[in-house]
Length: 199
Image (cartoon, rainbow, N blue to C red; front, top):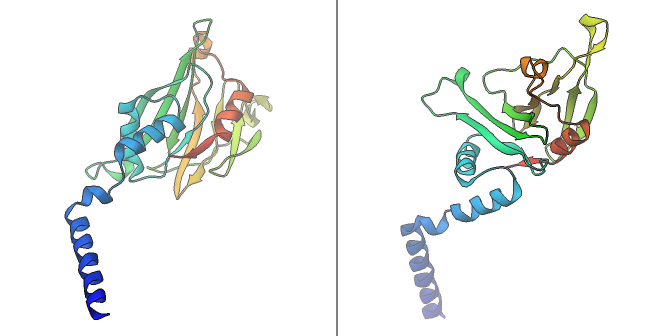
């Protein structure tokens, strides 16, 4: 009986030592993680998703698992290094596409790392997602302009992803007046937000 216990202990010690000497065996397979992320979160190429996975080590990142056809991650900013001042840190993704009529549609998912403030508008829709409830201001009423809708204004109130504040928004401004930009429909906007999941 003692010989069997001794043999069992020796086998366990050898296995433990071999495992400790080869930490890569214990590390997650980054190729597998990349493949899973690319399948789950549309619109990214491999290089972009690697950038997002690196940012994920520091922050919880909510991304849509559904985007309208043709949308791609156009721009990604991840300024989060140890040498970056906390007030200057940024994480955001800009998704964009061209419509059949040549106009551009875009939206952002951005983190409020350097400080956040409340929107001066009441939400027009409350959307449920895996991240939690999201309050959306889709062309909300502007109290300073006799309660008229804020044309082309789309932004969510801040929502939480593991103690990091995030918001959804769309581009507005001169491009709408120049007739170069088109709104994303409220139905598609809701679907994008409903599909949000943690990277």
